[in-house]
Image (cartoon, rainbow, N blue to C red; front, side):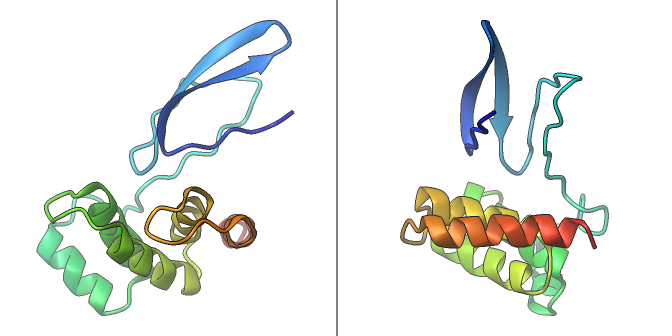
Length: 137
């Protein structure tokens, strides 16, 4: 079975002769759940969910990994601040290097699709593996 990962798209996953549409966007991931198959969903941690942007910036600069990842998401999508993929990747890297699984996951996507950083499949795989390891902690 092969897995298709994307940032903002509608994916069609084929199982035998059945085609199942799967709608997905990173950050606020929306998934049409197929019960017999596990789907990985990234969610914003409760510690920063609903936090104002000013407070989020303060927490990120103080070194909170969840806030660093969330600030990266804000930069990536331009939520309340100008869209800037390079700054998003800087915050994703800080979060990932602090052991945040979501930060590693977003950084892997950036490397896989060349969003703000040069495309590098090896680094993408490395950060996806780190994300998986960090989730098991």
